[in-house]
Length: 169
Length: 63
Image (tube, each protein chain N blue to C red):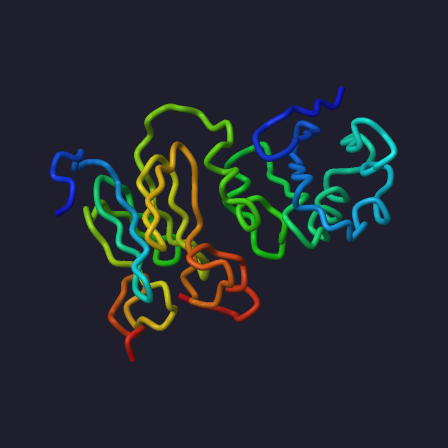
């Protein structure tokens, strides 16, 4: 059974491999989702998202077409999310980093790790205090990805453009 | 120092406006590009891409 669970800021749907988040108030009705993949995104059905309607690859592809943060996704295996590049435009870490903090990650107090990704961002994982733009946030058992190439439009967060510009370092 | 009652081991990540990323506290720094690992206590990491001492800030963002 596909389960549509309520969470603050919309709904989420999973096929076991990935979770797709839907934030209805962000939808601008660009209609890519159901024009491309009515088998999964059918506004006439309830629930309107059927995660069994297509392969994971296909669902990711169509979610990435959404021009807003109305549809976003993540791997259920947290480690895989670290390797997701900016070509995956609608991964939650690019569109809705606030979801990462709420993601159901294990609560064990593991040490904070700061990874300098090869030719990529700084990925900080664990529980820490994050201060930016005059805001102070508590990040709990989660991860953030900070731009290292200087080109991201989502500063201070990585949006994957390091690949496009061929950043090395 | 603003909160001296705060736990010193707590990791603090500060994005400096138009400057580097300052990280302090107990954390493990893993540099996958240069294949090394350390526990520096505090670092200033480059955010502009121009530093000549990757991954650390060398002040090049001001130039």
